[in-house]
Image (cartoon, rainbow, N blue to C red; front, top):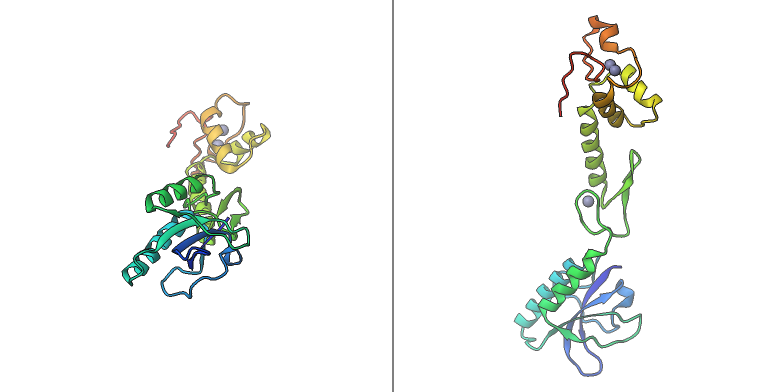
Amino acid sequence: MPWTVTRQIQWPDGTPMVEISDGDLDYTNPDALGAQYPGEFQTYDDPEEAVEAALQILDYWQGAGQTDAQLGIGATGGMTMPFEPISPEQAREWAAKRREGLPKCDRCGEILGKERYSHPEIPDQVFCREYCAESAYEDQELQELKFSSVCDSCRNVAYDNGISGVAHQAEAMAMLGADLEDHLCDAREAPGLNINCECACNPVKKIRR
Ligand SMILES: [Zn+2]
Ligand SMILES: [Zn+2]
Ligand SMILES: [Zn+2]
C-alpha cells in the first residue's frame, strides 16, 4: 500500500494540512494545492519516508507564513474526507508500526514496492532492485566457493544420498565423508593432478571454515 503526500485546505473547516493519504494520487483529497515543495504529489512505498517528506513540507510551509498548518494521516477511500491533525511524534509512531508488517527486500531491507526482482538461482528471495538481486547471488556464489574444495567424486556421494546444491554437498562431505560409504576421491585417484579435496574421507584433511 503506497502513500501520497499533498497539501490541502481541509473541507469544510479550512484547516491547512499536509496530508499523507492511503493509496496513490487517485486517492488524495480532490483539491490539493499546487506543488511548491519537494516531495509533494509523490507516492511513497515506505511510510517512514512519507512521514519525513510530509514533515519537511510542513516545515517549509509554516516557514513561508502558513503558521497554522497541520499534519494529517488518513484514507479518503476515493471520496472527500477531512483528516484529523496529529503531532510529528504520533506520525512517526504510526509509520514505524505500519512499516513492520510490510514486505522488505531480502538484501537491503527497503520496503518492496510494485516493482520486485528475483534471481533464478535464489528463487526464494525477493529484492527491491536488480542490484540487490545480483549482489545477493554473488554473495551466495562466494559462500559456495568456500566449500568447493571437495572433489566431484566425493560430492557425488552426497548427491546419491539425496543432498542437492554444491555447497550443501561439499559441506556434508567435509563433515561426514569418512562415515559415508567407501568411495573414490579424485585427490587419491589422481595425485598428480594436485586436487585438493577436503572431504573427510581423506586421511589428511583440513576443514577450513
Ligand atoms: Zn534491496
Ligand atoms: Zn570423499
Ligand atoms: Zn574427494
